[in-house]
Image (cartoon, rainbow, N blue to C red; front, side):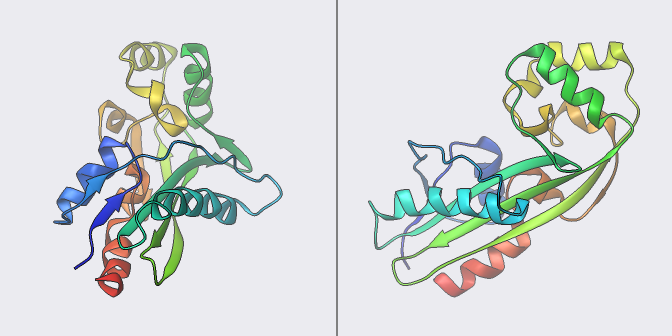
Length: 185
């Protein structure tokens, strides 16, 4: 069986790989591809995930490399990681009481094969008071998360519902990834 390399430094993606029972190493990419705003959102995210996988696969042609990228979108507006606390508060105000989409794209390279997919989940937030937003941002949890929240952390307090794979929101669609990996072993 070839080695599996996760091309991501995300602790959440490592946690999901552990839950899947994968034996893998971590090698984060050194460059970040920008999303192409001319492409449909799913294609743009998939292109970034592919770039991550291909960067690491070029160094390890006999390994199975998993690249992934996650975005949060409110309508046509993509919410990346907040630049500062005020930016995080603005994002949370947009999410509060509303539904948004989380798209996680995954690309897998194994030297012989290269394929990917994008998975989407809809998340609905409960209304949030200014005090709740300020308290959550003060916890620092939102600061390195797309959309300024962690569904697997303190952000769980604000989730009214999810339609789709919980792990897509967390950063790696578990069932679909496992299914695709079976072909690469």
